[in-house]
Length: 156
Image (cartoon, rainbow, N blue to C red; front, side, top):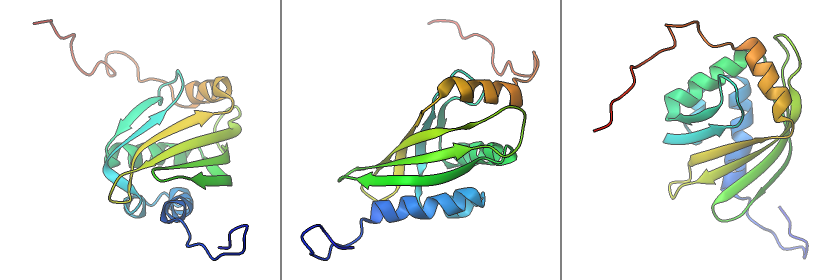
């Protein structure tokens, strides 16, 4: 890569990691995702739908990506920039299956730990209402009582 003043600049390994992530995400390759994502990753999905919230740990993130795969989610990176700790990518994200439309711009904020892996990520949707509607239509909650995982905890 060449800088504006003509100097050769080494590519940013964080940007290279993000560029490597998109194809393995598209292939739904959890093993390859683990080369980029830290085992204790916290990935926050925005919205008010059954799949929103923070996914904690590689297994949860890979499971979430599996679910997105059933909806045929695709991502086309448009811009990637970085500093010492973060990468921000802007991409078009859309669905190819399911009922309704999921097609919007996304900004992902990737935080890299000292080992060069992503330990935190936040998704930011260009049209959250559209994504909430799509997710509710295609990923409804399980009926009661199946979704009641634990009883209410009493205060101490």
